[in-house]
Image 1 (spheres, helix red, strand yellow):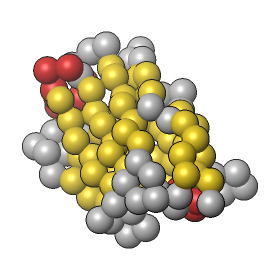
Image 2: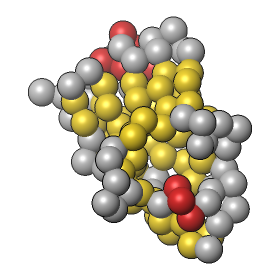
Image 3: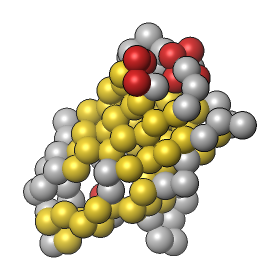
Length: 111
């Protein structure tokens, strides 16, 4: 079993920034693609960003140019830098690698 621990969520005003972190207690991030997903109330979970083991990234159209995903293999941690936040970014954000999910961290953006 792999434990993923997300942190960094919170309440921020529109236009603000947050940085989410997802830490694993193993080196699983070094050899697998890792994704950030989010789920807003009443909506399906959706992919926000994904980074491959080689460092390539893809982003949902809704966050391109505002969010940046990165990884630190030495710390077994991935990050999601979120800038220019909008109320529609409000959701629980989850980290995922292979079949493992974190517990989620709440991001709330007020208008």
